[in-house]
Structure formats: C-alpha cells, structure tokens
Image 1 (cartoon, rainbow, N blue to C red):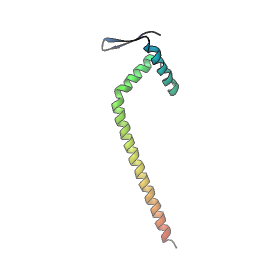
Image 2: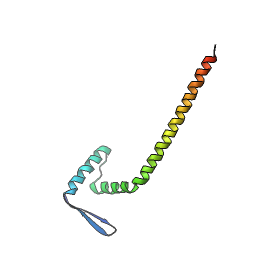
Image 3: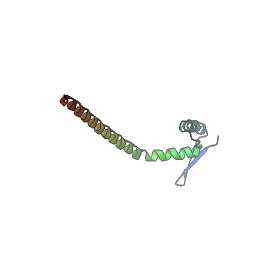
Image 4: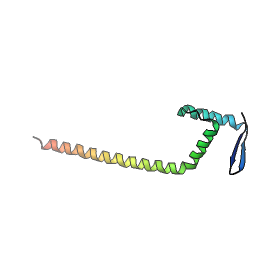
Length: 94
C-alpha cells in the first residue's frame, strides 16, 4: 500500500508505509460495524474531526445523561404518587 502523506497548514507529515495496512484494518472494522464504505482518507478525516469535537460531545453526553436521569426520577415519583393515591382510595372504599 502507498505511503500516507498528510498536509496540515502547509506542513507535510509522512506516515510510514507499514502504518497504512494497519490503519486499513481499523477502517475495515469500522466500515463493517457501521455498514459504511469509507476509504482510508475519508475515515481519517472523520476521525480527526471526532477528536476535535470530543470535549464538546462529552459535555453534551453528560448533559443528556443528567436530563434523562432527572426525567426518569420525575416519572418514578409520579408513578409512586399515583400508586399511593390508588391504594389510599381503595382503603376508603367500603
């Protein structure tokens, strides 16, 4: 497989020839897991972008988890109150 050359801000970086097949194994695994057909270059671009947004994504995930927990707790509290009310009403019925 050919050498992988990456240019960032006018500076060129060369990945060794031996790295390309190893990266391709990861690309193939990722494509199989996600039912995609990304070539190596597109896969690298996507994953570098994912690295760039990782802190923001992590914060969003934490926020969503907290909101889901709050929603679940509110639903549980409402269900408990409804069950309590039904049981109390059943006691009052002759």
